Image (cartoon, rainbow, N blue to C red):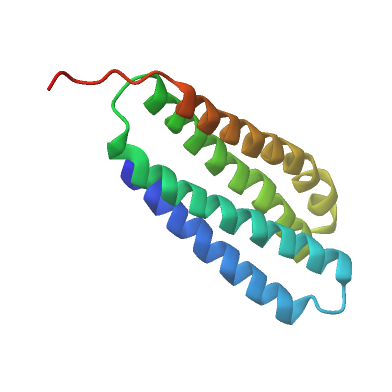
Length: 135
């Protein structure tokens, strides 16, 4: 699981940087689409870094409720990146006029909700009791 989180963090970071760079060159004349692309990159990169932190914490948190909360947070962040950042990126790219309105626009709020749930899972992981091993 730790390697999957790390791999997706790398993918999301690269996609965010590439998407932002492409949008700066290709969407300068359309401020709405450029804003969607910028927001997509911002949230994608921020949550890629959050995934890196979760992967780094993996071995520091023993199995139990705290680890389960970190797993939940990871999946929420991955889903949020795909739905929120991916949806905004598709809308910004103008992938398809019909698809732009119908599909990604409906997924963006779900992805945003997953981001919030992921951060609440991190909060829960911080409050979860951790059983210490006897010395």
